[in-house]
Amino acid sequence: MPLDRFGRNIQYLRVSLTDKCNLRCVYCMPEDIVFRPNAELMQDDELVLLLRLFAELGFSKFRLTGGEPTIRANIVEIVRELRQMEGVRQIAMTTNGVLLGHLAQPLKEAGLDRVNISIDTLDPTKFRRITRWGKLDDVWNGILASEEAGLTPLKLNAVVVRGFNDDDVPSLAELTINRPWQFRFIEMMPFADVADFAQQQIVTDVEIRQIIEDALGPMELVDNGRLDGEARLYRLPGAQGTIGLISSVTEPFCASCNRARLTADGVLRLCLLKDKEVDLLTPLRQGATLEDLKQVILDGIWQKPWGHELGSNVIPLTRVMSQIGG
Ligand code: SAM
Ligand code: SF4
Image (tube, rainbow, N blue to C red; front, side, top):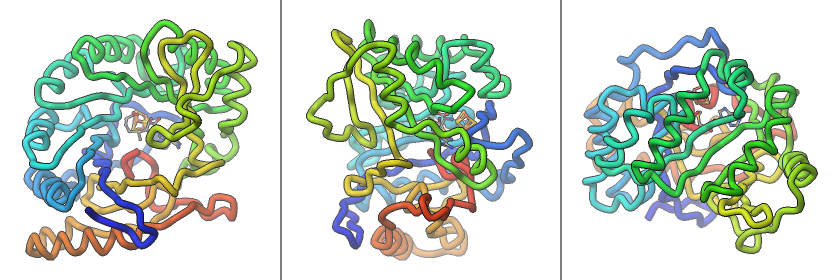
């Protein structure tokens, strides 16, 4: 199993299937973002080959993300191929849910286990303001279709943005009372072109928790505060579901980090908040052997960083979240 120099076992790969998206969330990308030409991104055969190498190296958990993963042509086929690889234990997807109304069932049949769906507000007008043109109904239909298809346990994500949806936190948290969902609130992180916005409008984990408890009463800590992935879980009194708080900025979870990222342009990104990267697609296209590529991956993983330096104003500059694979 791939190991880094701090002794962490890295076996979870988040794969960006595309840098493109059918929405333009204010915290994620500028409205006039220029996407990469397709020829510079991994083609299906290159993607499948690299995924196979990661699986052979001991990666067992895969999350498909982006950009918006559901807009990648052949997404169902890609999931099917991944499912058939030996050693692949879990396949999840992070998506804006817009296309899940018709894709949830075929994705489940192809072997997708579960989805995380982003939904920042239950107010259609605010949803349009945050996503710049999204329709809330599409996402809600996607959520219901995912549940019906069995892409469960369902997790929903909201990035909390001051002045945009901080007053929607209680109504989102309330969804967990009568449904067995995990609703995760994410601290906004600064990246490249959206860094200033993110730093000015951030709502911290402590504030988010206070907003929920002021409105809905004290929450109990679930599992003694043990992290579920990157989220610390809480439960509202009598609730069926749970609330997750993800404090990547104010309380990073580096000690339990077991993940690496493969960007849509075939680069191994070792930490979301650090620009350290290792190119895999160029050597692949230049004819590197599979053994060479595996060694490049292992050497890269060994160098995985620990800790961000946002406090010292060291901000990831090379890519926004959609280009990294959030
Ligand atoms: N398009 C899909 C979606 O929105 O779920 C997947 C890609 S998106 C980049 C993955 C996650 O990153 C989403 O939950 C999104 O809300 C989150 N995200 C995007 N920009 C962020 C930022 N600046 N800080 C924190 N989370 C962010
Ligand atoms: Fe698209 Fe997801 Fe970024 Fe929103 S957060 S712009 S849906 S990639």
